[in-house]
Structures are given as C-alpha cells and as structure tokens.
Image 1 (spheres, rainbow, N blue to C red):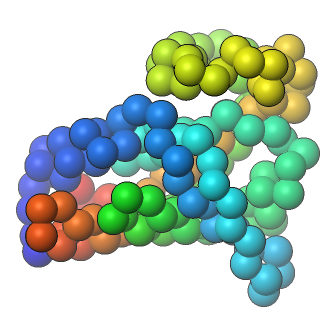
Image 2: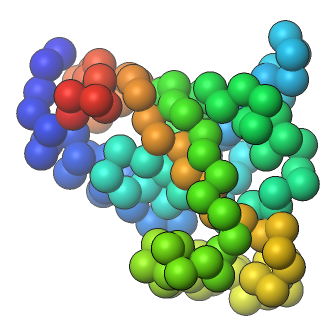
Length: 143
C-alpha cells in the first residue's frame, strides 16, 4: 500500500520513538547473527549505543547491510558507526538517547568515557510495517 511520508513517519515515531527492543541481524561472511538491542527511531533511522569492538560492529564494518525486526515491523538498512558517544557531532542525538534510555542507561552498563563506546545508526532502506490490519510497504528513500 502506498502512503505518504508524514503518515509513515507518524506510525514509526509512535511505535519506535522511545526505548524499543529491536532485533538486529548482521552477517559474518555467509553466516547470519541476530541480537536484541535497545534502540530509538527518528527520521528513517534507528539509533543504538554499543561497543565498537563488539561482534556486531566488526560485522557491520565488513558488511554494513543489516536487517531489523520488532513489533510488526521488518526492514533492511545500512549500519553506520557514527563514532564516540561524546563526539560533538553526536551531542544532540546522545541527549535524546540518554532521555529515551533513562530507565537503564546510567546503571553502569554503559561507560561513555570508554573510547570504544559508540553510536550506531541503522539508516533504513526498505521495510514492511503492519498497523491496525494494514500492511505498509515502505521505501524509506521515498517515505
């Protein structure tokens, strides 16, 4: 079903514009790996705070094509390491993420002073979203 950018963005923001558990799939050669990450959606991308030396980030560095799945939504995207969480260019998004992840972010699991703590962006390319019995095939380049 073809629908407008504003409607898709509204549905995505309502469903994922807060702390959301999202399955993230990567590949290591021909072998897929999937894990659940805390994420936040905004303007066609999911954002996650993670560790640059983790398997997922090493796999994304070799092959940035990823897939995500959560709450009646599946999509493909491109994973991008946006760098250290304290980098000036990440300040605005990190302020948003600290608020979104406030329930657990300061519990000692995340060390922002570690130079390997990074911001992962998954820029969505295409996906399928179900909402109230309607299927939306989404081209995020056009959405």
